[in-house]
Image 1 (tube, rainbow, N blue to C red):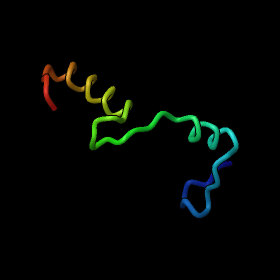
Image 2: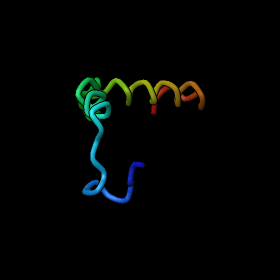
Image 3: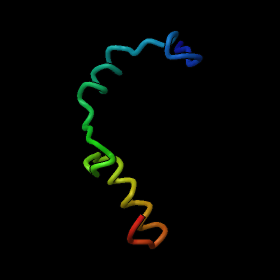
Image 4: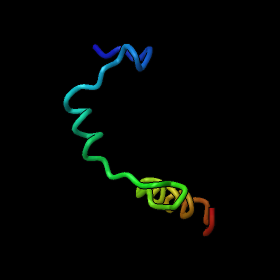
Length: 52
């Protein structure tokens, strides 16, 4: 069972560590984060706003 009370109590599993290691990351301020851009596009389409 995983304990979610605190970062100091919860330790990442090997599978979680692998996911973090392989995660695609980028700087959100410079608009290089692929997940931020994906979410921005989805919200833009749903709200019919082109610029968020």
